[in-house]
Image (cartoon, rainbow, N blue to C red; front, side, top):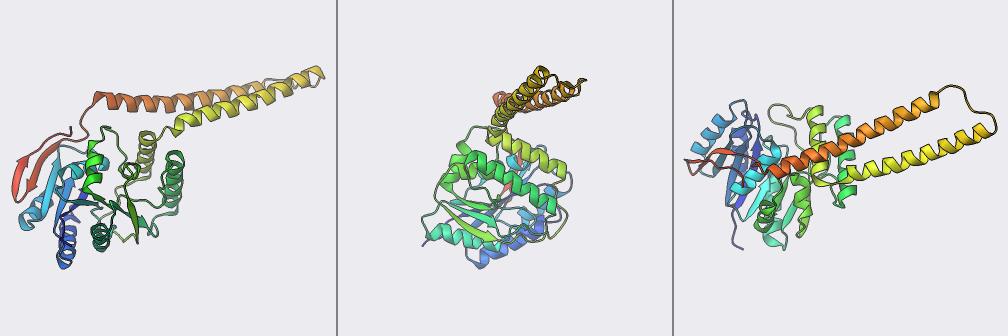
Length: 319
């Protein structure tokens, strides 16, 4: 069977120490397996010398393409910019730190090429050397997403191969606030799974702090599911039942002359209901902010320049 072009999209944020090694390792593996390929690096407004490293790579490696954002737009924007730039018949998403093992790309490619499959999804056998709090948080996060959306998100990752038809479907989706990991499952298509071990980082440290993970989780959940809004409804029902029970209890005690002195119960109820109201308003406000961001229709990213085949082209903005 004739080989088809594979695009490997790699979002890069402050990865100056990984760029050249990643390009070298991926290129070597693709050539050893006779896979026609291009590597699309997307510089997500890095504050270090990532862009300089990418310029060197594109000079030395004709298979490398470099995309430079005008500022930091986030990993989701970098993923979709890579999907829009990629020319391949299939596209693989992977991290720049080689924690997604490049050898698995060969397995993904052969499954896609030789079978009637549109998506080859990388699933983690384990979560590597992550701290316990990260593992617990990830487990809770994917259970919430999976339970509210009906998608199997357990041990999911961005590391996956997508057929050109899937890439085109994702590029045609109009929303500005995206969650690639769930959207690439939501579009459907025939899917096969491969399992991989998360490798250790070859250089640098993870860019994800606890606060950034929480922010990412909140944005992802509210961008892809309306579950928190239904949570407000259930909290309201539970609060009503509790209030009803306490009300009946208070009336009965009043009738039999055993009503408690003081206002502690009233104060506790007021604090409880006030907290629930403020929490509910916060969730609703977050969704309103999301709607506000969507209706402004600002581009998800702005590309300052693209280097392909050794030539620098002027950038563009997302449609």
